[in-house]
Length: 186
Image: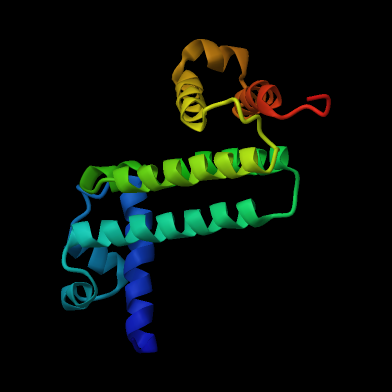
């Protein structure tokens, strides 16, 4: 792809992210998008089959970037509790990004969440094999518990208890992970 064509594609993508985030993908027309991006409709259709294809491209870009960051954190030479802390923060940011309203208006993110679950469980199993996480905890149970605890964020009572948005996840991680980590005396 030549440079000018690549620049126009990027202009469409960046404009779409901005407009879709503000107004939703259903409300923004291809015509409005092209006008804001400074490209013709013909140029739009050279790069994308339709608006759904554009949203899928944005979703896939964010998924790829997110999993690259997950793998980067996993490869870090730091204690497992610190990795979990970074991964928890990553998941919150990544999940809100790929589940943005404008993405979910037109396309599914189910495959991405399935892949995240697979990677998460593999990470826990690997940590169990290395003795960093207790072997007597089923990773699938842990997945279920983490998801149920995450649902508490939607609870008004939790928000009253933790007005600082970052404190609940920190408390949750402390409660959950220090109960799971293998102790020296074992």
